[in-house]
Each structure stands twice: as structure tokens, then as C-alpha cells.
Length: 86
Image 1 (tube, rainbow, N blue to C red):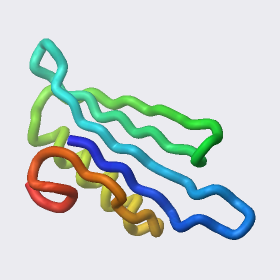
Image 2 (spheres, rainbow, N blue to C red; image 1 turned 60 degrees about the vertical axis):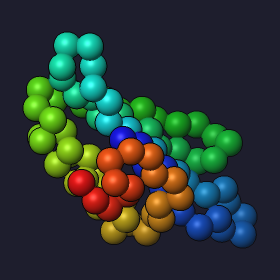
Image 3 (cartoon, rainbow, N blue to C red; image 1 turned 180 degrees about the horizontal axis):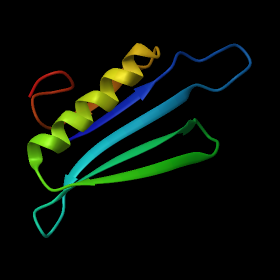
């Protein structure tokens, strides 16, 4: 699953973005990636690992909801019933 969220561009500043990706690894675990930064600027990447799929999905949804509350809007969604469903 992958989500790309972005803030509205300001007059003098570039929009900020967050990309949240959930992938299964070769050993059956799950990795949640959170990349954030400014369009055309520096970015930060954080990685969390989970053993269970359900636990990883809960973390994905929690990360998504936190960004939406901060004013980010979903610009692109891929996988698992779109951005809001399971």
C-alpha cells in the first residue's frame, strides 16, 4: 500500500509532502516507510518493522490519520481498497 499526501502550496514556500508505504518483506514481516519533506528539497525517511500484517495496517492507518489531521490531503493512493478502506 502506498499513500502520497501533500499540503497546499504557499505563496512563497514549496508544498510539503508525506509518503507512507507498507511493504511485505521476503521473510513474511512488514515494513512501514514514512518519507517526508519539501517538494524539491530535503527529505527524511523513517522505517518501522512489524511481524504481523494487522499490526502493520493499524500503524499505516494511524500514520495516515495523523497527517490528515495536520492538514495534508491525499494526492495518490495505491493498493488495498484506496486510501480509506481496508
